[in-house]
Image 1: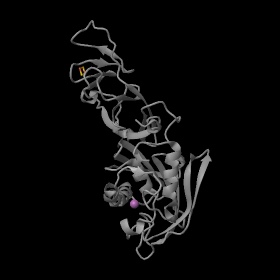
Image 2 (image 1 turned 30 degrees about the horizontal axis):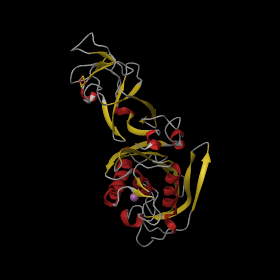
Image 3 (image 1 turned 180 degrees about the vertical axis):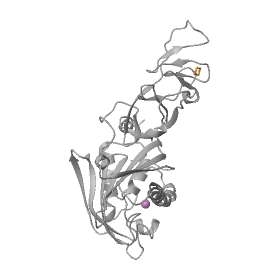
Image 4 (image 1 turned 135 degrees about the vertical axis):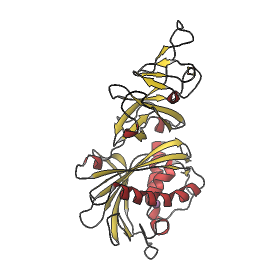
Length: 331
Ligand code: FES
Ligand code: CO
């Protein structure tokens, strides 16, 4: 398993999908980095993330029951307490209780549950400073399940030259396909942490946002803040502000669950309308992403042909190399 991703934090569910403890409260199963994860809340409201696998014979514990902060396996009824330690073996009540479920670190941030399967290289999930801004409304989109590697999805998110083709009439226009030059730099600051960013990116949009009625040149800023996290800030003319965080849950090296959290000051569109807009955009990207071969992002120079306006993609590839990421990439 790739240590960079093993030691990073990844979104695995909406916080609201994991209800408070109560009679027969459900447990939630999620997949992360080829590992089955089980999420549950104890009677104090504390969230737990365990390996969803009974140490006895590998059964999914999420198929069992949760009662009084005790999980019981559906197969032979072994029980496990809050720390994942076995507390009861019904078939042999006097047997030594050595079994222990693997327990992971979990945090809730941006309305999502984030899990780190390894030893955290960061204190918590990636920065998304716009989320803390009370002036901005928050909307959760997705999740979208895509048969592609997470790095391919990040690269697509950073790419503007496809707007006129894949999102024609919404994010782009075939009469205005040229991408003006833009600047790519590394950054290291208190707000976003460190990574690479592209600034002063301009693209013409026939419909600049859900609320827009006409086209305009839109300025974008793209930041890669972790190997699988990118934040786009749109600066349309006027007072509309919009930040879109792409938060990826790598399921396997070539399958990914995509979460999008928006922070914006459009208070007129409904949640459903904003979500439907992202759905439309994402469903246009999905077949392109799933057609890309190889599904793993090639980091070898010359494996794919790039031009000047791909410099943010190239900076992202360089960043992954520098981070020594192996998962979902070909080097
Ligand atoms: Fe879980 Fe046997 S597999 S108790
Ligand atoms: Co797109």
